[in-house]
Length: 227
Image 1: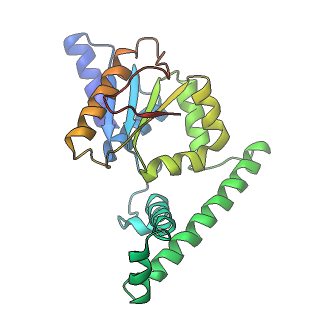
Image 2: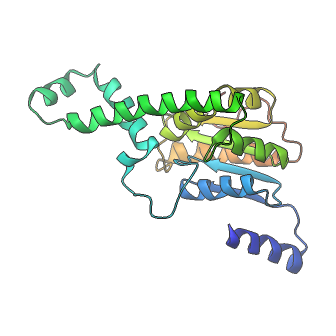
């Protein structure tokens, strides 16, 4: 964040640039998100496939220790129930059952924690590492915020899980924009996925002046799902 702040200051002092739009993918999306929460003077923040919304120094890099990894494992296990080949792997002992069970248990705990957080907000308890509080900060700073997710990317499920009805309300009121791009992976490694992402970004950034991106716009050649 200090680097971004220094870059903003340099752009303004050296080149007179005051309108800056910050775009990041994965870890870059996390940093862009945190800059929006901190209230850096930005014209627009676009976070593409963030996997975490809070980070502390020393945290494990093992995905199974994080909510996004647990969501990915649990959702993959549910999808596998429809695949006979996966059942055969299970019978042969080729499936890490303990990892799946731990992920599903962690996801259940995450949902229970979100319920307790919702109660805490209603009672005005101070909450740490709370996505809803962070979103309120972004809105208070009047920073236009867009999320772009690949289809099935666990970061979107985590965002919806942690922000719940508050996020839905902000999307409905156009304070937050969220786009899902079909047939694309986390890093947009295919040509189709990249083309869709570029078209989506072109549309979002060209509309950033008034943040009036409408759901009926064709954001990509492969039409993304609007939420």
